Image (cartoon, helix red, strand yellow):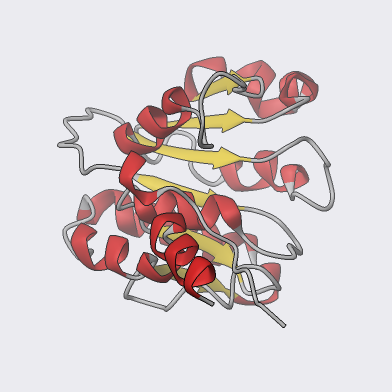
Length: 199
């Protein structure tokens, strides 16, 4: 039996010096409203609007379905919606354009209620981004509190928003981007491929 672990091409992700006036956070995932937690967008953003200067980038197949959300419709300046970024000409996923968006962001917001494995969490960490996630399957295995992110218990929206505000004021000084990147080294596809070939 050979175990082939979930892996990403970490070499695609290089540290990027951010000079954002706004606090930029990103969520990546296809539109499956309940499973992927997009129904939390209005609830969370309601606790952030007029409190911090932010932009929330939502990326994924079918993301245009969020256009009818109350806050996205009423306060479009706080949001950017990007349909699935896909280009089969690139050898490794995620697409370079998506990698660049990760690297220019300050924080990754994982909203899913459940995941078999949080690939987007690994991608965000490979970019040096701290992650906020609900304490649920797919996030709790990857996120270590106060090291590479935070886990919010019981799908508590208020605590989720408080943590975003807290990090926006810190301007990520608490987090060491190199440590965050190091926390996902075991998911490097180049290293894992060599191990599998030798098996």
